[in-house]
Image (cartoon, rainbow, N blue to C red; front, side):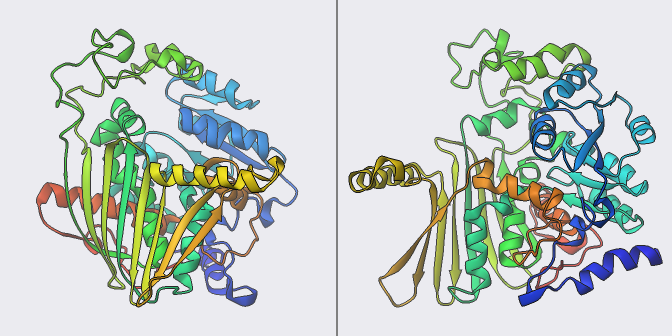
Length: 475
């Protein structure tokens, strides 16, 4: 590492203790809109003008942060999507189909990567090599070799990498973090964590490029990276060993019929998973109108033979602090949600969201509330998520209601982007900021799980990259 690089990055790590022991935002956020840009807008470029790029990292930034950032370039290999994306974002900037040309011409100081997962490393590394700070959508990348290449590039760079883990910022999840940090039920020994994708959201992954392992690394990497990052963050420890089982038994070839795409499929009336993309104007304009450029079908058949990812997965993770985790991911559930339980020496913490009978119970509570309160005061009656805490040797339990804010993920999306673009000097006592090590440790669980399924054997995290697990998460 270069001497001046060490001074800038490591000094922040070693001196980032604020009043009351709260840590300053991690090094990955130290420059994003910070001291180097007090008077000038950050020059931002974005590569990958699919729906995630043009919405969450595109139009949202343009509308909410245009006083501190300026889009100076957009890039995509599909010129049609690129042109539509520019108009959708509302950015007055050049567009490029050549990434290197964009960097040469636009001269950005911040790059946002929202391309197909398997290509993230290409753009991240090129950005870091030019000392451009990078924000990447999750997952950071899709295999251990690309992960190592990213880590090596950041070591040699004077720039930093941010991974967009918006799940951390949900009030529900941050409340769980606070309970664990305060050892509300003592030392945690094991965790039960189950995530359910419904037959609409779950199926959508198999229609898209995510259904091909070479593009998305399987849902153990693309989707579960969110969940594994939450575990790493909640438990404040690194994973050391992973054992997993998984199979493809529902989607893909597991159906007697299939079509070319939903729009022209002869089995529309008999397929429970038929999806009419023509009802979504944005998807029609962004994807369907531009299929001729690259052949990408947004409403591809989820029964196509090319699908090679798992649709059911279970994972066991051992952590360096001796916590054991049982995790599962279901992709064809009747409802969308999650359940998690933390087992401690002194009790248990249970949390969930999206469970239909609990949602109905909240509605019932709202009706009762309406009988007692004026109409103006009942709007927030069901706008909360729940946590139950129960101590050993007692029949009592603590019912915690966590008020949700407006916006995506209970307001978590806004909190993430505010920390990156506005509140860059704000104290971060929960260590919400995520850098390359966080991004790596989350995907390495998924990569290890995938390797374990293929080999039938446990996989050690330390065998995948140069990162060595620690009992306490390194910041």
